[in-house]
Image (cartoon, rainbow, N blue to C red):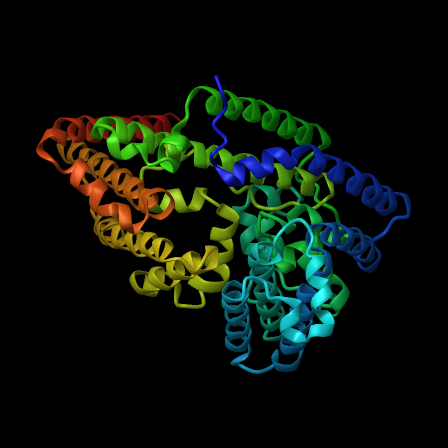
Length: 470
């Protein structure tokens, strides 16, 4: 039986895995050999990592590395010039959003746009489109700018209070959150470290996203939260999960049904099975891609947040889902978007800004904007219900039973809504909504919908029992 390779992202990652692994091994041997052999810290480690990373970027993007360095240089100049002004973060955001938009509109630019004498460089654009990877560079440029501005205006992080609640910090180590929130000394925000942070090879292509503060702090002191044995175990688990997706794509061709649009000819229950299979595949695909690069980073001495800390099947509400899907990006959004917008005080309004930015950051497509706004529409009632639920304390056994049943029903509704939103954003698109709704809401589909909803309800109840047992 042939293997389902219809997903372009997974096909490219899987096909380039041997070369990528050779690059990873070479990078780690040279970088770690020099770092530990010559006791390099700070500036020395930055220089070694930057040189190796630029060689890697030249292979990926060829002459287009020049675009990256020019934009990075302009951003650095803006940060340094306006850092002491109140509106600095607004300028940083405006510049980076403009770059994000222009990069997509002009498809990474052509050298001929800047003069015919540079047109020959269009023949040396590398093997990978630079403006696709640049989305992550934008996050890092914003992180550098905001961290520097907030350091100058004094940090409000109470480390002693944090240590009382954090088991990692209380044990004498330093957790990622503390590394992120503790402001560095002003002399740590240098152009060399900044460029190293933007181009750091293990995290350059796909993340996970790490803040500037956390990255720069680990240049001096490599991460100690993961032992050699734990990192080896982490790598072994990755291999086992890679074998799992190999089996899955060999026997279950979910994506092929979607890409070929054969799903339109299936029954409602079959559409549900295919849709659910696509979502499971998406989770496992991103799980493997992000963990591969996180493993590379951990071996290099830099700890980053885990992007998939919880399985997609263990998220009965939208809040827990988004804390567990691309979790490092979620932490970035909370620090640089959600909290500056007012945090929980303006939650109902800020989520619209957050998800619209997430959609635009991924790509300038209407189907992603549709996905973002559908997600927000599902999020609003959950926020309202949770606010009432938190104030409600059931005292009787019957009251607690009713409250738990309502939570399970709400969880089933949330899972259903989340599934529809992701199908619109990543599978059928806005043009396929009418066909999907017509098939799923037809009277012949009602028994299938009842079975699906009951399955979700039972699954949410099972999640509750597992969490209670823990």
